Image (cartoon, rainbow, N blue to C red):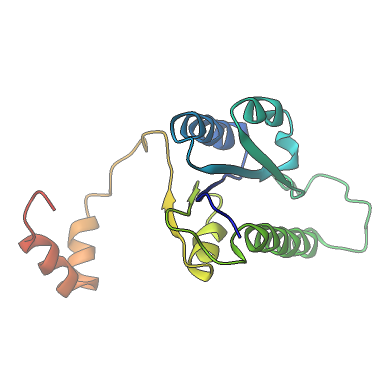
Length: 172
């Protein structure tokens, strides 16, 4: 049974998607020493292991590639690109589930949580499954605003929610 709460940071994608989350995990581990901090990402980002270990973050690789290209040769010529991609996704999800089960499978500790980037949305479902808190971490500004028709469309599709949000105090 664990005595310390665990903070899992799960980030998938290319370096630009993963490295900022790794930096946040390392900073969190330095600042919040009462946590065991774990970082889950593609094995292609193995070079992060040394930096993370120096900051007391456990690195756990997942074998799926950051990007799957239809132009690559996969060795199994009988598989179509779509079939190969489905195979990768299925193994990726299995690996993620196994890792999270190893971490939280014996029950959660107060303070446990998972922080994910937008390419690690399976972490959200796994957090629900293991009843731990989950947040999405996006350490960059989204470079666009909602389309001009967003409010009108939202009001049309979700009138009750729209009215509730309109009536809420501005500080909530």
